[in-house]
Image 1 (tube, rainbow, N blue to C red):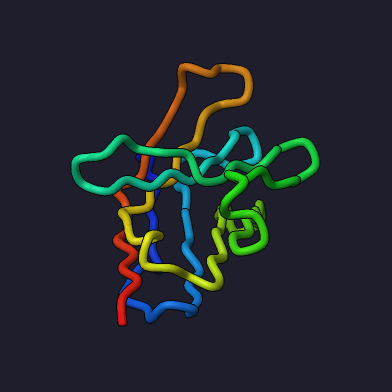
Image 2: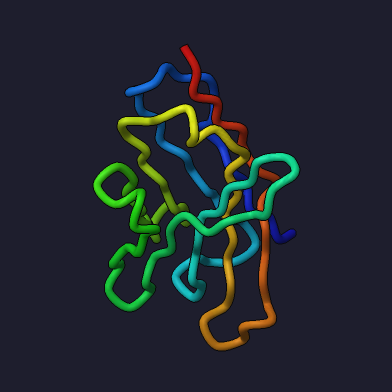
Length: 119
């Protein structure tokens, strides 16, 4: 059973923080490039961050650098997205994506978790 499940979303005030989790089952994330995306209804899904499987370095959209941090815990088969200093414009459904590093057509998506930033 292959699954990719996001959790950790919710309602938070501007300036607050959330940590999103992307838990994998049925495969191990150490063989996959994992990325976070977000989508607002009516708009295109956009990439937020991805993690390099070679050295665990994170890559981010420029506007999010310094606020978002991606990390991987292979022992827990989970990737995280720490989100700080949240702004209303960060409100979206956040999805994780796992793509095999060699078999690139092997790709999985989670169901998404809602993040709402509002006072």
